[in-house]
Length: 267
Image 1: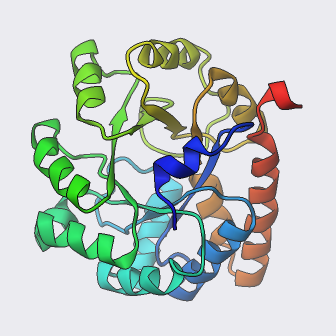
Image 2 (image 1 turned 90 degrees about the horizontal axis):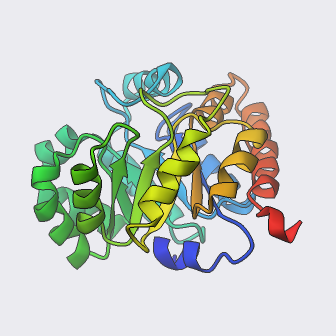
């Protein structure tokens, strides 16, 4: 697999499509099939959520998916074993979304080494204290892991500048306040917020939280972002009791979103 930055920088006429799925939902085998299917259906990068018992940044859809996965015995070791097998079969770089406690419980250095060895190319830790980001960032850098820090609409100017300085080459902009989940609208003021960030840095920007519809993707790509993260809409489709039907729904949805990320100047 190529790196996350290489992947996004290679896209000339569109922004990157970044689906999110929860590992182990609806099953370990379902996750395996979903990763391969998303890769074949136009995903540029795939974000995989490690199930956690207290997912504070996640909305009800992903919370339920995490609960189901944990009840079925999903663990980090099982996910790493799966990634080791699948990462050689797909071209989309994989990003791990995890809370900080599982990282601390395993040991920061060991955790990062293990995910890098498995084939993970980037990591998002939404509750990583900024004061501890330097140590994690240094470890990630030496392991060729992209540490992706988050900027929210409520971040202060000082915090935004700190995140810009501590980020490797990619920053995750949260499109709304609150937890993840499907929303009907993305505030137009986000365009100004993104412009403000872009005026301070040349690092790449991806946008996520609440993006679930084609019209929203068509709206946000006008802000010249480099990638769109879509989570709950994919996770919900994978919850279908009929796994084959759910995967087919995911494929059609991914293909529709792939068409939506083409920038208007090329239409």
